[in-house]
Amino acid sequence: MLATPGTLPPPAQDDRWAYETKQDGQRVVVYLPGDGSVLLRARSGEDITGAYPELRPLGGTLGSTPAILDGEVVALDAHGRADFQLLQSRMGLAHSPQRAARLAAQTPVHLVLFDVMHLARPLLTLPYAQRRARLQELTLDGPTWSTPAAVVGHGTEALRATREHGLEGLVCKRLDSVYEPGVRSRSWIKIRNMRSADVVVGGWLPGKGRLTGLPGAVLLGQRAAGHLRYVGRVGTGWSEAERAELAALLRAAETDTCPFTPAPRVPGARWVLPRLVGEVSYSTRTRTGLLRQPSWLRLRPDLTPEESAADLPEDAV
Image (cartoon, rainbow, N blue to C red; front, side, top):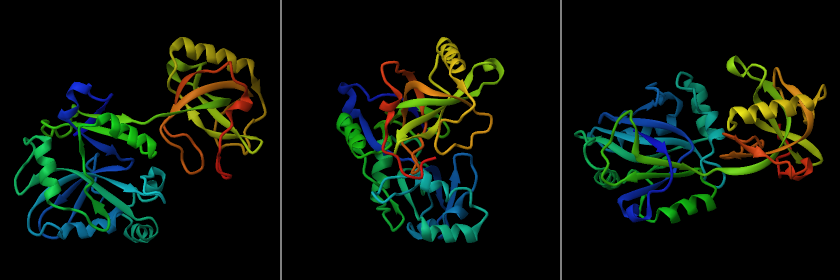
């Protein structure tokens, strides 16, 4: 069951919803056959059990009771927050058991559980509130897995708390909703905390197909330690008219010299004089300062390139 992007429920309906922290990790369905084993499947259906050997002990937690659980595998940073960049080193190792075991010791993962679809019998038609109560009763809290509580009501406060603690966002779930496998349902609403930043355009990548002759993406930078540091690319957020306007501005600013220090490895890039300032939204930054999930908001002709300063790591590239 998947969540639909949206906003908080109306205040008058607040007490009909539960609120869970949105996790920045890999979604998994956990199969516990009741024989001491565990099977993890990704959203694609792929068996990824081998990638996370530290989760194998979960197989014996419910004894002989078969269960199917819903959750998310995360890697936590030094502040206890999910860090997708850390998790990436652990993904894709289902068929490399030795490497998976080695990385498990270096970067252990944690399984966050938030639903139960089967517990000795199918629970799909039970309302969320009852399924969540059954899950809590299992007290599945171990060395590398946990069942964080959901908050009923108080959605505004819950969303504010995720923003104040630098978390990815919030998932709102109707208390009376059944579990709909494979459905992106309006009974689950996800709200991603987006941030904004002022950036300098230092280059662009030509578009293809209907975007031939127009920018498919622009390359972004921010000032740090006296240099324009590359912070990523953005290719969404423009209307057709805005993209055409930007194309004209980019052609007028063309140069053969890369304005970024150090120069990023971006095949096919076309460089421009770093004088255009824009504003983008993004979810988080990687540890090297790159913007994750950026989207273009607007040009900022009222700002100078020097006003795009950011506190970036020394190894930002």
